[in-house]
Length: 344
Image (cartoon, rainbow, N blue to C red; front, side, top):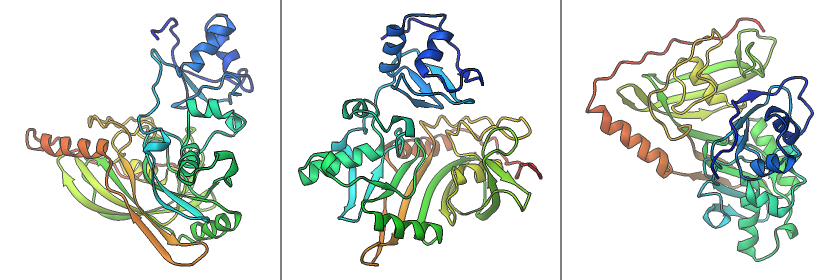
């Protein structure tokens, strides 16, 4: 569908907060008909905070960023139950390989959606439940609901576990709280960085509306990331990042604050002092992958561990960086070190 309307991306104002997506879009588009607005949304041409939204009744919040796309956004080719890889399934847990480009769970306002509507914009939770239903040959609604114990960002790929019972959710939750779950990520970042441990206190708003670290010891929650170098390339570094804690966007924030954001990063390239770190890598998406996951089975207590290699898109991206390394001189990108406010 070719675009019929032009609308620059906008941030939802206090006056627009609480109104439906359809109402706000109709107002911004100078009163086009309700049917046309609903068709735009149903055609996957509207993003809220970088995620496609197909719910015209979604209530917007102040600060939401809304983008009208020129063309419909297709579903990721991996967003089908038949393509989802289940690594482990029993009555207590399910471990899956999350593809990039889909959310782990559905926005709370979208949980009342019908099955048909969910199929138009599935989450990993949906795909997993449908894949289990296909494997055990029963309707999805007959299965126990999946329980969330951790998440991966929309553009992050990798291993993830869902609990299938309340008891499994409780026991896994305790393991995550005790920091005994083993989680290792592979990240491809800008510049040359050495192995180290990042420790900071993370807050929801570092002073510019974004999550980040503070030096104030009385604010936020402790965040610890252990980083080892896998390979140095001219202008880039391939890292192994092990989470000790699991704060939202923790790896992305720690690396960006050190001046070495993950390739493909679109949020944390903005520094608190207003500077923007340019990314010349051409990454197809956020170059972050949850490569290892390990924990004690919530029922048997047996130690479980899985590994997952880089998916094809990041493998091709890494090979491209390696090939181009021999064809150009590195500009020697240098990080600027941590930059975050002392007080919030």
